[in-house]
Image (cartoon, rainbow, N blue to C red; front, top):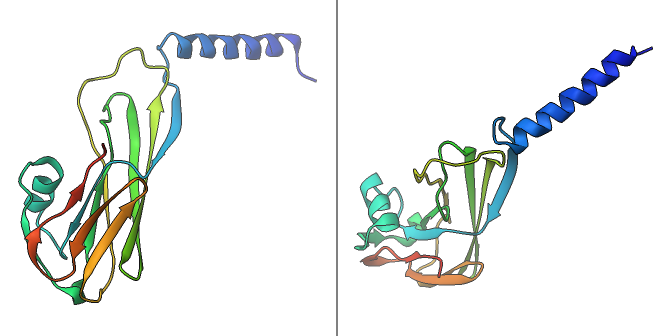
Length: 166
């Protein structure tokens, strides 16, 4: 049998916890997920970190030499910014499926956000993921990411194509 004071303590404990969360004193971490958002770029295999950063954040796309047997290296970056004080456990996945001359890219970003926070730091963090197509036949490919697309030739030297949200 549970003593009556234990029930009251449990009720008070729940009430106090709810009050602290609603006042922003206690974190209230909630798992969230975003699917198919952000920037997607199609690289030749093994791009340098500098080329990836230049393509994702810069205005000048790096030049890459594409070889069909190597396939494409897709790099996806999440949309928006994540706050180091309000967001945690960031992870992103990327898959690329080839069907004929069409490459469908699916991304998913998972994280926890503190719904109890009164304010969040204004720093801006990103998360990214990469996936590979495997060997491709020579030709022009269309890469689809839900609501937008880009084209890339599987051979030759060209600027790295990227697709950004509208």
